[in-house]
Length: 217
Image: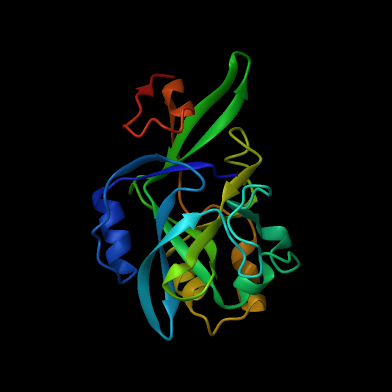
């Protein structure tokens, strides 16, 4: 699962966005939560662009934005069969760049939040997008793809976002590639080593948009 993330302009984050071929003019954002507007990188007609999108997929065939069904994450195992995701999987794939994401671990004293990042302070999360409505009145929206957690991450949570390396990012965005071509990417595996930091419970409040204190283990 991935229910919160940070996008902070670390040097690694700037390098990631520049490598993806879009201007790195993002603002620092903390504790980003589902239904908020976030940047996503898409490829259309061979060109990459950064679009503002609602983090909670709104299928093009739906009645409009709703939180009735949890659609901020999409399970990799059912992408090809889900009514909401099988269409976007064909040609509407995106990347959500983040500097870290936040996960909660069940512990004796309750759920403890942890920040997960890499030594570069940047990750490219695989996502799907769609467009609901017509013309300029429509809504771009997206969801983050998740897989079963690799064993190195299972002590935190049973699921994790699908993190793509540089070559996988190209494959994921290229609309020429079919879902069958992308199947190997959906197999859980570790792209990079994780850095895990215990966080203050102040992150539990999604309205808290400040940098959250890291706690000593």
